[in-house]
Image (tube, rainbow, N blue to C red; front, side, top):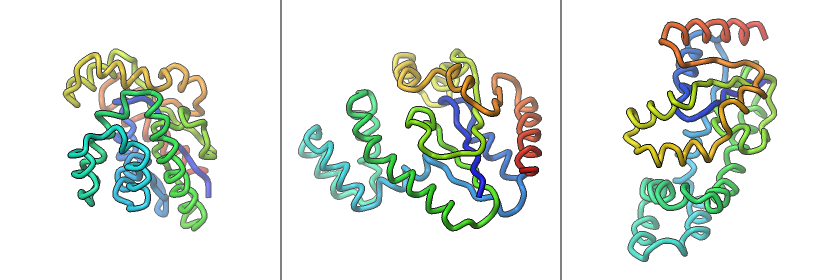
Length: 206
């Protein structure tokens, strides 16, 4: 099974590209989203316990009690976003727990060999060391000014928080340089659709 990875920066439009591709690729294409995988991972009992063990010392007693008794893991996810993600050291610890789970999920799909192509949306593909083997890496890119505007308008973040999120990732320019295919999403929706159609034609030929 061949694997195409879709990566890029925050607010670049990766999810939109995946949505557009889903109606254009050959039947039997398998899909994987790292963000969705992580969202479900928080509710896996063993993984949730590992996260609480790793970061419980940073929690107030009332926070830990609420998190331990929230089976959906919504409180844990919110707490990690507020108290762990802003710290580079703590974020790396979090990633060391979550990334093996994501990698195993990808490998499980590939091992089943159901279809000829796996399209995996992996936003941090480069940041985690390109550990998922791929036949094609597609980067969805925008200028930093557009990222800042979209994050502030669409996610309600202030500029300082937005810049902190962007600084935690590789610069778009570095990802573009390493990519096999680049989709530029600074323009209007029709330009994105045209680029996505060309990409779909390429993938359908593989």
